[in-house]
Image (cartoon, rainbow over the protein chains, first blue to last red):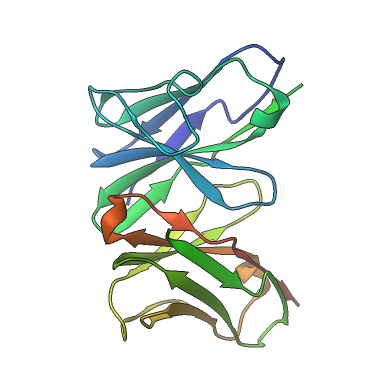
Amino acid sequence: SAVISQKPSRDICQRGTSLTIQCQVDSQVTMMFWYRQQPGQSLTLIATANQGSEATYESGFVIDKFPISRPNLTFSTLTVSNMSPEDSSIYLCSGRLAADTQYFGPGTRLTVL
Amino acid sequence: EDQVTQSPEALRLQEGESSSLNCSYTVSGLRGLFWYRQDPGKGPEFLFTLYSAGEEKEKERLKATLTKKESFLHITAPKPEDSATYLCAVQAEAAGNKLTFGGGTRVLVKP
């Protein structure tokens, strides 16, 4: 299995500012992902974090708004830029350890005022 | 477009009252179907991955089964600690490593 940690666990931010979320995995996962979970809803994939290259974004998500880094196999960051209240959500880091197992971090609960 | 629908949205059970959760899916070629448990304020906890129709997997009081159009998560003699939201997700052959999630089933087991 893989243990995934995220920092911060929660934050309250002012609109127009940016927040960077860190994700650390205790194993060398093959893939890393960032998901968003809005209150009371299910998970939506934001992007796949690629080691040493630009992330692959899903429809509706763009690099200028959600820049992602993955400098090595066990660490990634997601930045939520120029935040608005609509960005209030839980952001989850995920790692694929093998073809059939994918683990999630505890999430970062973001509130934008 | 890949679609995943879970039912019911919510389920209230008495302790010991067995039941099943449904996950219906539409994908252009299934690579895998994943089940997760999510407790309030926490990230999803991986339970199972199923690959082909007829496959079954078990973990404690949980058993997942798969057909060509749906998956069931059976909870046998549930306990209050089984209360959680159960999520299913599909990985389609054409979608790379993307998981498409259903809306989840909130399960409450009362003592």
